[in-house]
Image 1 (cartoon, rainbow, N blue to C red):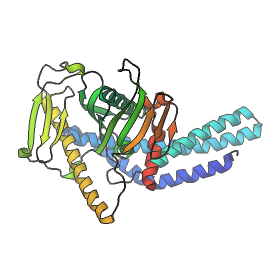
Image 2: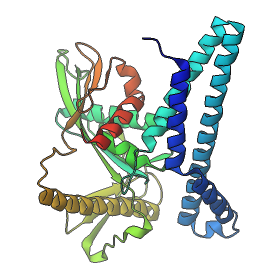
Image 3: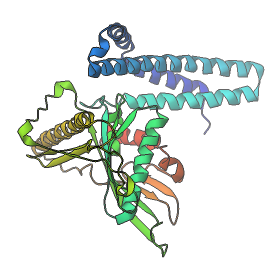
Image 4: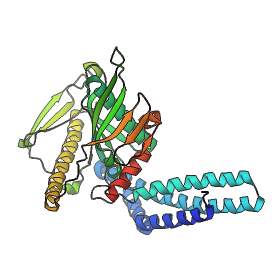
Length: 366
């Protein structure tokens, strides 16, 4: 059944109007004005943490307004494109108008998904940990492939990220890696990726060329903010310093600048070795530890609520996506049923369809 462009444009206009109301454009404009005043203060960078928050939030708010303004203009223009094409009876011009309509529709759909991120921590930056699970050296290699997939996704969206710690496996790949995604709504967006990812392929590490199934786990937690009040007494910490290492155990730094923090009451261990000073590595490791303790607290509170409600829903830690490279090519999300045969694109960071479907799935609870 052919799409009626006029009706579709009317629907897109209604959707965009709804998005503009949800994102509250007038309030966004007022926030930009306030942040511009703060950003122009001569002593702004005396407090670097506050300065980064101000400039990051200002950039995000300006980007939201520009995105909405651009989409509104494009939507108005595509209507004019159809009118002109009909007046001239120009099939090529109408085809151009159709392509632009589809492009605008996709952009509005992506922005609509953002309006679904209304959870308590959804607007925050994210800390993501990738871990090799069952599957030996193939699992370590798979974990490194997933790390690249997510960093490529960030690069595609111009999201700054910083790898805090990488634990390399002996033969190939990584045991684990933790990185921060420093963009607003990174947590709400990426949290749907949490769980176990399964890979099926011919193992490049098996000299008999047998098929291998391997697993890697993704953990996503929100970054701690100053209002969270996560205090960690010094007597609850064990601090170890050591020399950073690279693939194959080779030394990266010639000084003991890497830092490992152990939270004695919970046994949580975090480390940071991204080739900066020991003081900076300790600060980054402490931020990760605070985030993990906040997430632990949130999960404990959620468990109490679930117990009261009598909920028995499966945990996020269950297997959630399957990547098959042999005997056929397919990536399939086991929660949303979204799938694609373009495995190369997915592993290169093109996971928007999976993330969008995951956000909608989480919102509907089905």
